[in-house]
Length: 70
Image 1: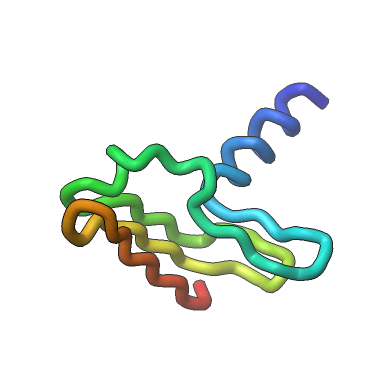
Image 2: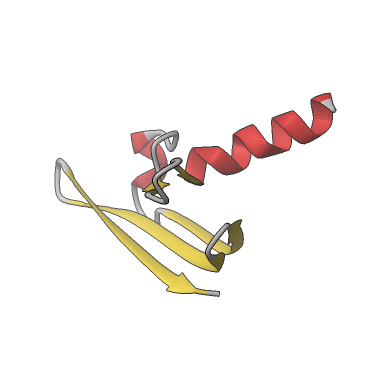
C-alpha cells in the first residue's frame, strides 16, 4: 500500500482531479522544473483518459501549459 500511495502522490504533482471533475494541472511542479525545455509527460493517466502534458516557462512569471489527448 505504501508504494502505491507514493506513486499516486508523484502523479498528483502533475495532474489530479477534484470532486467536481476539475482537472488541476501542475500544482506540485517546482517552478525551476519549467525552465529551458520544461516538463514533458506522455501517457499521464487521468479519469478523463490518457493525456500528454508540457509545461514550459515563458518569461519571468508565465508558464505555458499544453494538454493533449495521449
